[in-house]
Figure: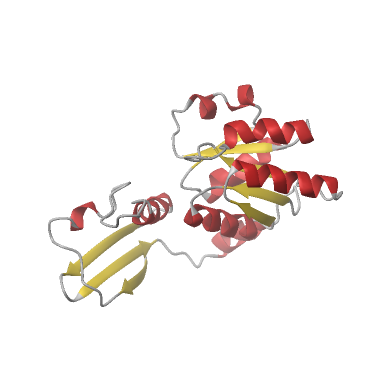
Amino acid sequence: MTLITVKDHGIGIPEEIVDKVFDPYFSTKQEGSGLGLATCHAIISKHDGYLTVNSVPGQGSVFSIYLPASNSKANRLAMQQEKSSTLGSLNILVMDDEEMFRHVLKSQLNHLGHQVVLTVDGTEAVNTYRTMWESGSPFDLTILDLTIPGAMGGKEAVGEIHAINPVAKVIVASGYSSDPVIANYRDFGFCAATGKPFNLNELRKAITKAFT
């Protein structure tokens, strides 16, 4: 097991709310989304680890990340095989309104050997797709967040992308596995679906499915 600790010397977390800091949408900040620590907790859990916090008001907080570790030859070989995808290196357009999700997804896609362009909503994604299509350098794959509050989401953007390229490969991503678009993604114009927070193995499977 590998331990990573992150410590600050801030005001600390009051005892009455320390147990809530990993809850989705819980935030003490007026403009906070309450998704930062919840996302970290979910990602670490999906990698068979766990995240804890120890805080003393007035003295700061310590976050401890525990992750399983392996130095085995088989583990290193598996990672190399993940990188050398039979699809080769793809140019992928990503759309997500949450900065953390965008950069986590970019890191995972880079790990798999792909090139990535990031956008924040459906309008920017469609405009970026059109620009690259008209330049003669189209994206091989697009990954769209299903829901963008106050802006165009993936459900609408996929139709506009298919108006540009009827055979575009588009994956839908969402944290709501029960959403009918996720359950019946092909009916809405997508060729695969993946959950959020992003899991490397599930993401690789979704990309493979998009091209089969």
